Length: 155
Image (cartoon, rainbow, N blue to C red; front, side, top):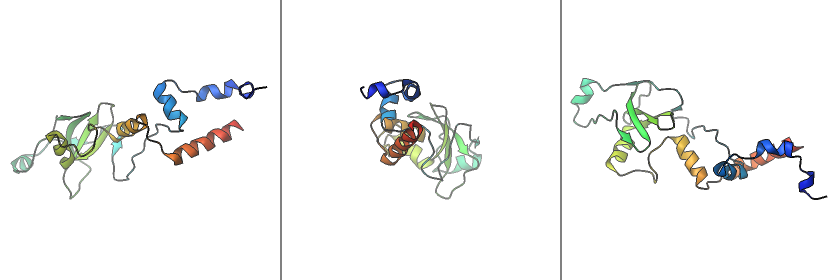
C-alpha cells in the first residue's frame, strides 16, 4: 500500500487551496486574518469619523488640504475626528480594498511629492501584508503553529 492510498481525501479536500496564490500561502501555513502590528494603528472595515478642515487651519501657511487626493491605492477623506496627537494631524484614508485607516499628514505629503518612504505604492496595511505574502514573505512561527493545528486535526 502506498502512502497516498492511506490518505483520506474527504479530510484533505477542504484544506486544498483555490488558486495559485492561495496555494503558495497555504503551503507555508499562512492565512489572511489581518490584525495591525501596533496597537496605535487604526484599521477598520467601517468608515472612520472625519471632518473638513476649518477656516483657522486654512489660514495657517504650513497647512495643506489633502482632502480628495489619491495617493497610490489610498484616497484621503478628511481629518480624523477621534485621533488627536501632538506629532501632527491624522487623516482618514480609504484603500481600494474598502478598508479605512488613519495616516499622518507627513507621510501623505511625502507620498504626494513622490518621495515615498516605503518601497511600494501607498496602500493599507492589510493590502501591504497580502503583497508581502504574495512575494514570498514567510513567518516561521505562524507556519509552525498552523502545521501543529493541521497535525492535531488529522489525528
